[in-house]
Length: 196
Image 1 (cartoon, one colour):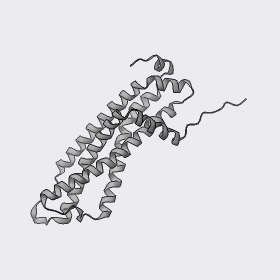
Image 2 (cartoon, one colour; image 1 turned 45 degrees about the vertical axis):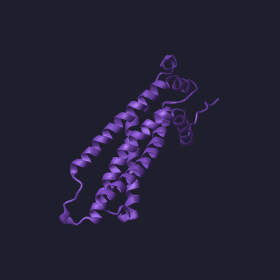
Image 3 (cartoon, one colour; image 1 turned 180 degrees about the vertical axis):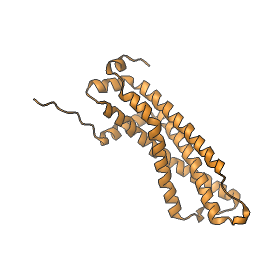
Image 4 (cartoon, one colour; image 1 turned 135 degrees about the horizontal axis):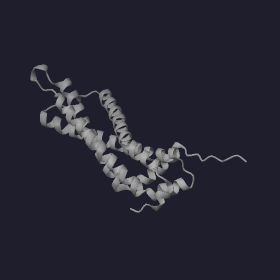
């Protein structure tokens, strides 16, 4: 008699990931906020650079300096460390849940898929929220500098939205790989014995 294989589709991973985000909203909110702040900083800087290119004469000397993008890089590193820390805590909090899943037949790849799906959900939320916050900050910068914020072509805004979405996905996925791998490699017996 053939062995029956357990299937765990990507849609199942996203459904369970969404349920975990809802159940652990406070922790999820911290991850979304970390992503959103880094993305908002990057969005504001990129949009300000675009406005200066479209509105400012070259003689005025108004430009975005290279070190400012260095500060964005530092904010992304801090964001990644925050996400990794938060996801590691989530792994330890869910040890028994992971152990139960593995005892019921979940494979390492299923647990890995679950954490990565949750990471994608948080990244999309953080990316969109960060872009919106960055755009609002840009409007404030434009009011302060006397430029029109809406002088940026819509194609530039859409391109930046695509970039920040991909950037937030990459940042969140990279920060989640280690905790997800650690969760996937948990021994079911040890995980069931683990107490938080």
